[in-house]
Image 1: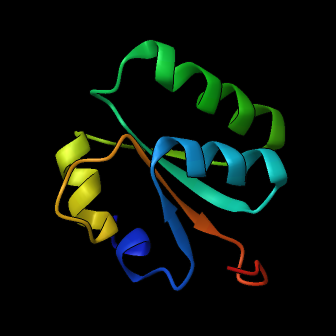
Image 2: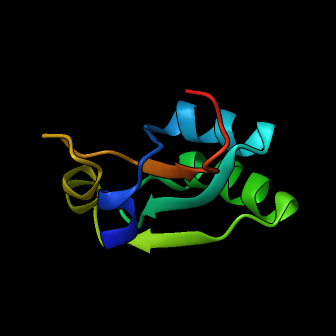
Amino acid sequence: MRSLANAAKKVVGFKQCLKAAESGQAQSVYLARDVEEKIRRPLLETCQKRGIPVIEADSMAELGKASGIRIGTAAAAILHPDTAK
C-alpha cells in the first residue's frame, strides 16, 4: 500500500483502473477484497490477460485511504511513469 500512497501517477476508481489496464497504462492494480464479484471479475481478467500484477487490499476503506481520498474505492492503479496524465 505504501507504493500506492507514494505513486506519482495513479488513478482511483473501478472505471479508471479498467481503462488504464485495457490501454496498457497500468503498472499495477490494487483491488479491494470486499468488492462484489461482478465488479472484480472484469478487472482481474483484464489484468491477467495483460500481465498486470494485482495487489489485494483488505477493504474499500483501506484502499481509499491509501489512495489519498476520504471515501472507499473498489480499485486503484499505479500508472507507468511515462504515461501522460
